Structures are given as structure tokens and as C-alpha cells.
Image (cartoon, rainbow, N blue to C red; front, side, top):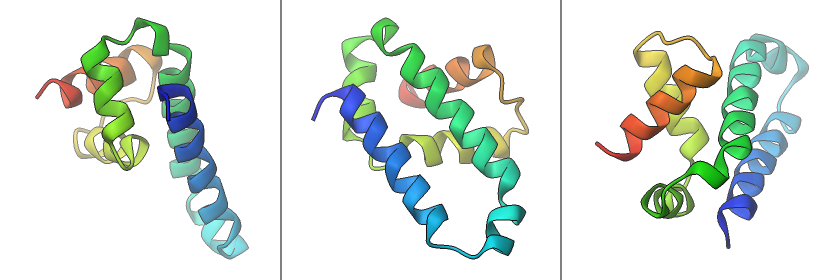
Length: 94
């Protein structure tokens, strides 16, 4: 599986999880859904700029979107492109 397929798989898996939950739960997770979609979009748009090490790490990760979301929430970071990419590089290169 290449990096593009991996990111699509992760996002599809998350969407399917949300589709299997109640409407109330979806409403309570609206902010999380928006933030994770932003992470997915930023990573997907910047795949060509990833180093081979970063691409390998992303492909080997079971859930890079969830991991990055949790990392950013712990640091109370803003979910904007520059911050997402900075946290991604920091997370991968730790």
C-alpha cells in the first residue's frame, strides 16, 4: 500500500466508524471530525514534500490521523496547516 492509499484508508475507516454511531454522538464529536478532516487534508496535500522516512512512518502507522490529533489536543495546538505540518514532522522525528 502506498502513502496515498494509506491516507485514504485511514480516512475511510474513520468515516465508517462515524457512520456506525448515533446522531447524538456525531454531534458531540463535530469538532473532532472537523479537526481530523483538516489533518487528513493537510497531510494528503503535502505528501509529495514528505521525506522517504516520513512517508514510511506514515504508512507503517496504524492511525497517524488519530495519533496526530491526540498529540495536538494535548498541546492545545491550533488546527491550521503550518501547525499540523510542524506537529507531524515533530511527531515522526521524535
